[in-house]
Length: 126
Image (cartoon, helix red, strand yellow):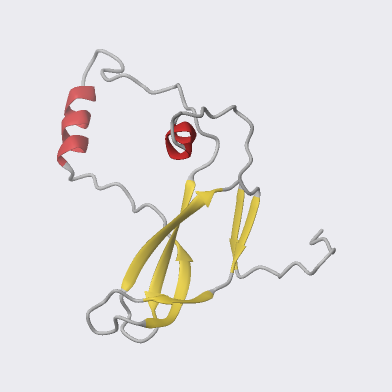
């Protein structure tokens, strides 16, 4: 018989979204700092990672703009087959003692907030 790990590896995603729909994370978190100055558990400030603005001077962008210029319409394929409805959340952690940044990815979720009201037992936020 195959081991449990190999059986788990070959299971397919059935299509139902069983991940958390709403995630609320505190603004500060005590976690390990990997910087050579610290190398211990310290308080970290939590923010959400955001993608930076695309540079117009990047080689790919220059090549694309050059190819697009003039007559001839759209030159490169435009992607339409989007499969995912959510993105994985990436937390940006800044150490309060040495100001070192580290990143930590968490699971997919539909709604994400930092430092929202805590939900008590048996109560609703709405």
